[in-house]
Length: 300
Image (cartoon, rainbow, N blue to C red; front, side, top):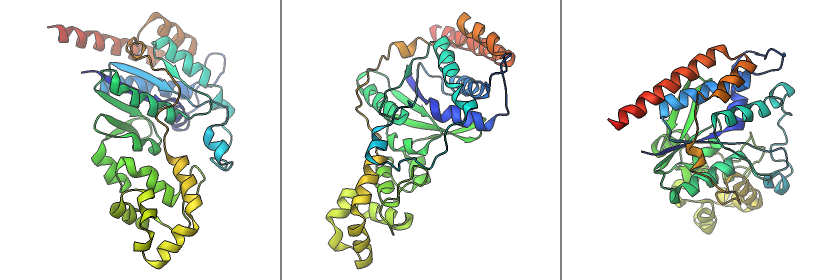
């Protein structure tokens, strides 16, 4: 059965950088985030057994969300130099693995993943698993798309289907943008509708189904709730636009290329020698042998 794993490169590199102790190459260049990305990738290959893999990255240019709302993520500190300097090495590593990298100015990695997972419907690939540390992407979960979230550093993860999302978030995956339109998102720095908290938001979404449907039924709501929604409508509409992952950005998906990856190629081994990845060199060789053995078993 074909399975596509889509990795949020920014989210995993950030998580790896903060989860692992400092590590440098022979030249003294920081490399711990790349080490963590590779470790995560190898574990994903062993656990999830994908046939196709691709990685999405943010770009430095302002996104459409930042253009719409100047305060979007404005409270976040600049990326540390010791992390930002590892992105090109991470992309070089993925290239050595034969894993395609996707990025597009004006959009976030989430939008790229949303679009690629949407295009899968016409590719013949049966299942998609998104690997990220960002819960925003849970809104993409459906019958064919699941999300793998690390839950303990880089060593443990959990796969979220529809039931797991509802249990964690209190709403269906497709309703997450509606929920965030009401309560906002502190990490992305938008406030939603002032005075509407999580419990009220969940109750409203459960009863009416969506942000727009709630506003069509304002006259059915208690006076105080109605007034808060009326006065906070513009903020809620902006928050909804910021929260929704775009699934139709102008990017081409090469699913055949996503199926051409290899973990123990000469390019990988040469690059790991350059980085000083002795332990990971042994791991990629072991995983390579495992893949060959599993493929041979399928032919029997």
